[in-house]
Amino acid sequence: MSMSPSNPQIVVLGGGLTGLSAAFHVARRHPHARITLFEKKGRFGGWVRSERVEVHDEDGNKASVVLEAGARTIRANAKPVLELVNLLKLGPQVLTTPRSAPAARSRFLHIPGAPGLSPLPSSLLSVLTTPLGRLILSSALPEAVWPHNRPADVSDESVDAFLSRRFGAEFARTLGSALVHGIYGAASTALSVRAAFPSLWASEERGRGSVVWGEIGPPAWFGASQRKEEAQKADEAEAWEFSSGTALDGKLADASIISFKDGVQTLIDGLVHALEGSENVSLRSSTEVSAVKQTEDFQTFEISLADGTSLSATHIISALPLPALSAILPPNKPLPHLLTNPFSTVTVMNLVFPTARLTAPLHPPGFGYLIPRPEGGYPDTPGAVGMLGVVFDTASLADQDYALGAESGNSDKPYPATDQPKFVKLTAMLGGPYPTQTPPPSDEALLASVLPQVAAQLQTELPTPSFYRVHRNAQSIPTYLVGHVERMADLRAVLKEQWGGRLMVIGAGVGGVSVSDCVRAGREAAREVASGGDKEI
Ligand SMILES: C=Cc1c2[nH]c(c1C)Cc1[nH]c(c(CCC(=O)O)c1C)Cc1[nH]c(c(C)c1CCC(=O)O)Cc1[nH]c(c(C)c1C=C)C2
Image (cartoon, rainbow, N blue to C red; front, top):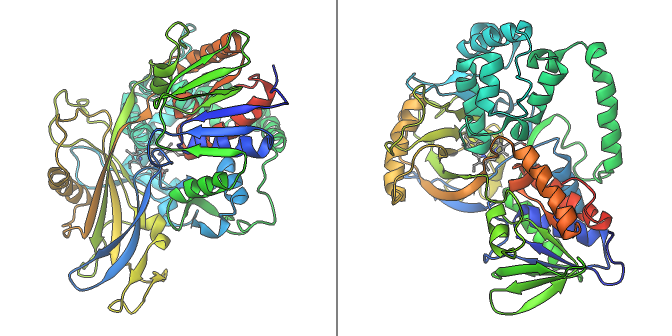
């Protein structure tokens, strides 16, 4: 079934990054469609939220600093985001971190119970000389000769089970759990490897049982050159609109990650601005949708709003969290699997420290550190605040911040790259799979618990922060449980057969939690609207 050419009315549910991207791409692709986006809250952007705050120290230094509640950086090769940056003309706002910068090269783990930080190897030499390098080597070498050991009836497993099976339990706990903390804020024992790291799963198949060979195997054996060609063709077919003649040119050469002068919220503000300027789009915040139903011939939806009004639509793109979508579907026509996955709650604590009186840097140069699951597992009862990791934000995002006022002698200008900033920002990430106290501790109590932990991990004395902010991102990141890929295929089939492909379900709950995944999902939904739901979500 294809989009009715006469008067398509498209409703987008949810005003986070996915919903806004969907509305933007639909508006571009279908200029004759009427698009209405509903957002329950009073602001757009969902979990993306940047704020600029003024900080000062006791010596009279002042600065303007950007803090993030959610995502803070984006990979420089994230084509859906680069395209959006280009289309929204946000190139001049983009900040880049070069691949050679410590923030791109140096990462650390803090192993619970052991003092300080352990570097993750970033060169061949460090593979041989660091404890984590030796763990990687002593797990990867046997893996390469370990026979195929995936049971024939296993079509998915947890990240922890997968890594333990191939690389051993210590590797899985130390590196696997830390990685999963840093992306999903979840337990690697629960997360599906096929859904979260499909390339690992595929590598095992390509390598005839060995992930290592699947990753690095000789090209002729595994058809690597053919794969590269296929990837290139797929890329061309995508027809990304950002290749040349844009302000991004040059900026991205040698960049590893990007962000924006005023934070990731720039993407949201750019989308909202563009959509508000579109005649065929209506953005409705503070508006709750209470029910949706579809006529039997699949042609029309009736969308009821909490204020008692309603409207009709030919298509719905839902970018709502799956449980929120479940709550507004007709009770006699539920969709499968919307309530299967749990969500993790990640508490984000932004900390800004004054540095003028420090005699040594607050932390080593690098991106930050992740903290693996403790050897004995997560505690059963809430105790000290469970820490997942710390990001050294100033290392990659110093250009967002600038000195203020006469005392600095550097009024309203970005910190010169050579200057030691007078303030350093760090973000502590807490919660996830650790049990939480009810009621949650106050911000002051949380700070009092986190500061000594961070000081011990960094093996330094911390000055009193000039500023801190706590964001409790409740139920923010879905944990794809084992079997997610198959369940989503089932969901797609039902959407096609029982909803005529006119209800599209996208977003972090379905197909990827990164900024790039969200933008890509919105872009693909716009294409799907035209094809009547034949494309895979
Ligand atoms: C609010 C906390 C978040 C945690 N994970 C995410 C958020 C928003 C989502 C996320 N984080 C990363 C990825 C992968 C990105 C990609 O591959 O393109 C995703 C989807 C990686 C990542 N983790 C941390 C940072 C700074 C980054 C880079 C991207 C980003 O800015 O989010 C640090 C970090 N995030 C979390 C924890 C516990 C943590 C620890 C240091 C949870």
